[in-house]
Image (tube, rainbow, N blue to C red; front, side, top):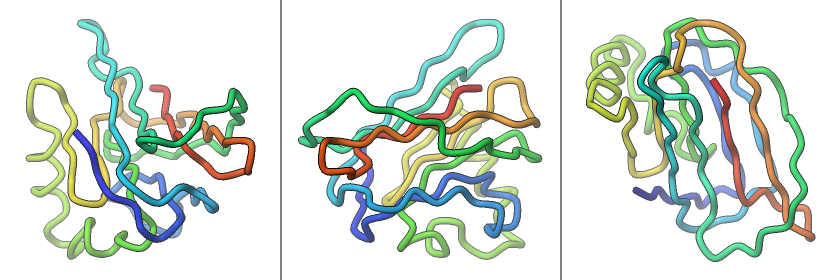
Length: 143
């Protein structure tokens, strides 16, 4: 599926934790972003990425940071819609367990995507790939 980015920035976070711990990816392409999820039978989801449709890729990736996961879930969300997509704190557990409870273990929202984090809690690398102009066109999380 796809989601929309209009703020020029993305955040990557555990959606059930405080958003202050989010990894912010500034200078990102606006537009529709396609989500890719890779799973295996032993660990479930092993990788999720979001890439801007129509952006001209350029092979230049760098590890942005390590994502702390305490709830077994991770999300990539348009920074401008962070509060809208997460919703009220007291309703997040049920909302995100429902979104990640299917066979794929991931769901697309209007302005982001959420997935189970493979082996559960821990620290996971987040990579941002930028084009020749320095704009992020792909963000990926390895579990």
